[in-house]
Amino acid sequence: MSTAAIIPAAGLGLRLGGEAPKALREVGGESLLVHALRGLRAATAADLACVVIAVPPGTEQAVRELLQPYSGPLELLIVAGGAERTDSVRLALELVPAEGIDCVLVHDAARSFAPPDLIERVVAAVIGGAPAVVPAIPVTDTIKRVDAGGLVVDTPDRSTLVAVQTPQGFEPGLLRKAHSGDTGGATDDAMLCERLGVPVLTVAGSQDAFKVTRPRDLILAEAILAERRSS
Ligand code: CTP
Ligand code: MG
Image (tube, rainbow, N blue to C red):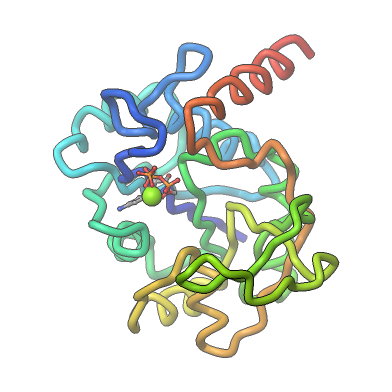
């Protein structure tokens, strides 16, 4: 059993603001990308063999040097990302070894604090036979569908809604097939599998796997880190 992970880290982090691309912004003295990589490595039952990271074009060498101390025995590959997240994932997927990998994870650098047990749950479900797996948590807001004019169209029953996170896990051949077609409008990788008619399984997510998106999220990230370092 062997797992590969793709980390899309090529976004600019416009909503977060600041000078550096989001994945290179620091929390507790280390970049979000380093935190994400450490979480994946800590998921020992995932049996991670290879990590491919899509980074902003031009930062490849800097990221390679940054991650050198954290890679250990992992095969660590860096690739220039693309214009959209799906482009970054596709470009990284091209570097995932064609043989010997049973599960491919796609994990946002911005979900830097996804706990190792969540990562292991996703991998276990893929190895157990689910072709596509997403971590999910219940939504706490009431969600409404609205039209272009801002009028509410309807309110889906909240008990049927979940928010999904990463890492999402896939049978390697399925992920390749999902990314070989039109990826327009897809906001996650599971959606591409849904379009192929493949069942997508949810497993329990975690609040700690939230996506660092806006400046205040850095405060929550600092708090999670402080809590972990003190325990
Ligand atoms: N990402 C990527 N390539 C892109 C866009 C996004 O690899 N062209 C990555 C981001 O680096 C991030 C993940 O996809 O780890 C989720 O994207 P998001 O949270 O939207 O990050 P950004 O696109 O960087 O942020 P923003 O949308 O605020 O600019
Ligand atoms: Mg974005």
